Length: 259
Ligand code: NDP
Image (cartoon, rainbow, N blue to C red; front, side, top):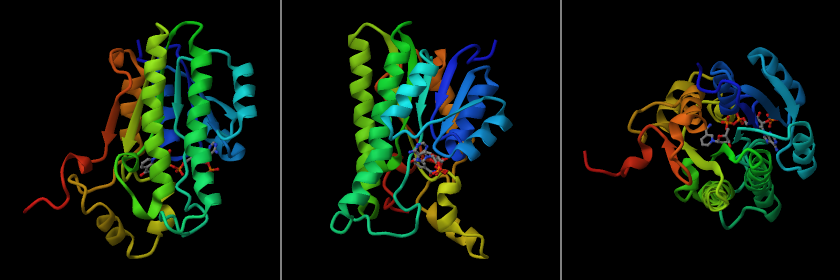
């Protein structure tokens, strides 16, 4: 008996990175995984490699969620993973003084509106059986201020809080629908590639980026996926409204501690 046997699991932003690892992990544990992504070609290719189903879904678009609900009216696990930093097209000002309203809204549209819609879909797809697990991928950036990525940090902080509202709402309805947030930091995915490059200084850049991380390395998408699996499974039936940091110890103490 595998931990996800027969469970219907929806994962957003599953074409690559953390979402892909989550989809593969849930599939390997027996889940009936529906990998979704904005990018139809990449998403379908990933799903074929994993051996799961693919549905195109732009998390920002309510019509996409409505279509998914029609095609997939019930679900046991929904992982709201899709997210953007706002730097996908290159460096742009995202500090509180200079970030444009357009850029600010675009980051919130994907990260926060997408998670709100995903939670709403999940509740609709779970309440019939009154059970399920919603996992929202927030970030370490949702727990601390990030001056040069203020929109990203704000959107991820809002995900953390909305997770608790969803958890309390579902518990209040008498459903066993749990909702928790996961807060990764420095996970080596394509999100970092533009910054790291492929030059001879790649290793030095990586070391510098994790110099404040107690474990002194990047995490892997699989390390996030195994925590998501735990939250999705019956190992976590008493966990709701909580947040799990997966950050190599970064938030355990102050980077400025003596010695
Ligand atoms: P990636 O950029 O590697 O992957 C994100 C995936 O989401 C891509 O396939 C992307 O598609 C897709 N996506 C983007 N916008 C949408 C949308 N509107 N609808 C559907 N899919 C979309 O990111 P990661 O795997 O690194 O990150 C996954 C999650 O983890 C994000 O929420 C991120 O904020 C969070 N996170 C990541 C950390 C890290 O260090 N990597 C640290 C903390 C949090 P496309 O390629 O077409 O844009």
